[in-house]
Length: 247
Image (cartoon, rainbow, N blue to C red; front, side, top):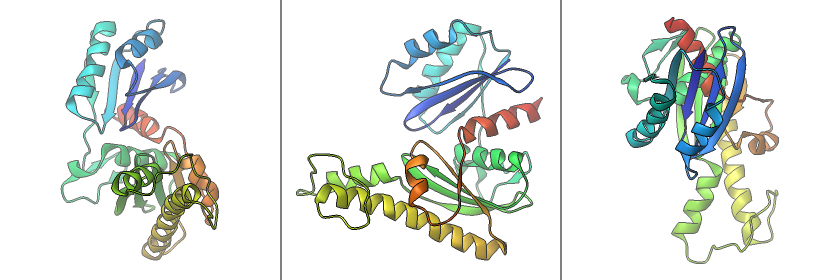
C-alpha cells in the first residue's frame, strides 16, 4: 500500500494506492485549514501504508507538518522526490535539474506514461506553468507566469481604483471593471497557452497533444481555440509511476 502526497502551493492532495495500482481513496486539504487534524481524520480508517512518497513545492515547515502526521499514524518517513535529470523516460532540460519544479517534472512523467508522443503540458493554478515534451521524452523547456487568479490579486494590490465590488465574469468585451479584470487575466492566460503551443509545434515539427491540469484548468479550457484535454491528478499519477520504478 502506497500513500502518495502532492504538496502544492494552495493545497495538499493525497491518494492511497493499492499494490494493483488502483486508488482506494483520495482527497485534498487547503493549507488554510487545520491540516493535521483533517489528515488524521481522513487517514485513520485506511489501511496502513507500506511506503509514503511525496512531491512538494512548499517550504520545509509544511513538509514537516505532514511528515509528523505520517510518523504518528504509521511510523514511516516520507520519501520526498526531488527533481532528477532523468527518470521514467523523461529527460530534464534544465542545466540545474533540481531547479525545475518537481510538480512540472511529474506531470511530464504522467503524460509520457499515458502514451508516447509529443505533449504540451499546462498547469493552471497559483502559477501557470507550461512545458513541452517530445516523443522521445526530452523536455524542451517551459515558461512560468502568474495564474489567472494571482494576476487579478496582483492587479488589485497594485492599483488604487481597481477594486471591483463583485467577482467578474469572463466575456469578450467588458463594460464594467469587474468583468474587464477577470476577462483580461483569463484571456491573457489562454493567449499564453496558445502561443506556447504554437511555438512548441514549430520546434517539434508536429502538433503536440495539449494537456491542461491544475485547479483552474476547467475554467481555462473553454477559452482556448486549440483542442486540449483535461488531466486530473497529474502530479500524483506521475509520482505513482516514479514510486513503482523505484521498486
